[in-house]
Image 1 (cartoon, rainbow, N blue to C red):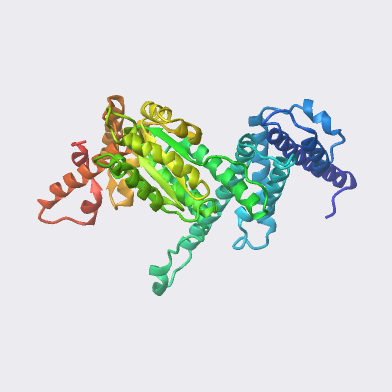
Image 2 (image 1 turned 45 degrees about the horizontal axis):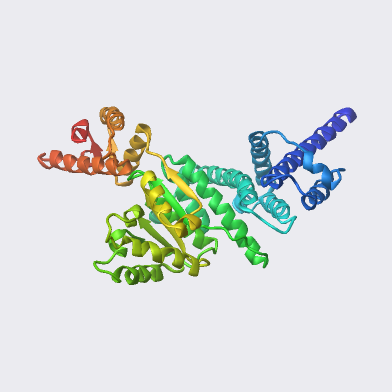
Length: 444
């Protein structure tokens, strides 16, 4: 039945207002990106007026203010989620719809690229500000993709499966290398601040890749990193992921990851260290050189050869800046002294990512994940005991606290204890083989 005339007009007016608010949200995003490095200049102002059909002279944007960034981002996320879901419904074929390739994400890239290049220069503040929005867009798309996948899994589980097909029914997801890295990053327990920093790196590298393809100038920004934090907080795991991410985006030619510590760089006599360090650096060209406990290279005593390695590293970073990323890691206070030990290091390591200690709850989740991944379960009594044990371990943590390494040690002791317990049984079933009891966890 056709709608009454006044209802039809009301709907048109409502959709017109919705379209207006979408444009306003995008306009606010563009202004926030353009003003992140200072007042909006005339080049950026002219582009904003033309792109959003605003009747404002270019210089008027110098005094334009918008709601706080968080308000704009909340509105942006809500509207983008709605658009992606509508586009899925309108696609006609949900199996072929790919949220990460939705045209609205392409439009977002065009807006960001246009604003950042309005004055023919891009700086890290503009790139990082735009990265906040592309992070939101990517999160919305990945969230929808995950929900689509979960729905498909439910439908697949409830459908009858021929016996001949059952062992082949689990197939890997069709993810690009970058999507696989992002999924792995977000599968890590905790580390929310670390994930945000890595997402910013991803988006800056992504923008640079687009500029490279279009033969546009690339700002001279450093992608070398300092990772600080206590042992077992995930520094090496994240560094490996970063090497894959840079490779997937074309920032590095390979996903090679060379991991060394002081012993891999420092020799036993004068002159040996420089050559040894050069060989290691040469082996890492095209990928990432990861130096764990890098602070140990700083001068310990008068004739310490670690300083020779420190002299070689900045020069290598400069000579191979287009195809080598150096990531150094260690305790926060000691890494600060290490970076300050050489002016060349201080100028090249401009970004630090801090890895906080895991909470007791996060350690509990890590143990559960280790158990599940290795085919073990915990009964109710052992779960209660494990949670209390993690809280006690965290409350009593001292200089030897090793975060996830402690959890892995606890898991390995539980495996041994369970094996000792059931090995004395005359008979045992599959449930006994896979279940941890409170007794197995008592040796934490």
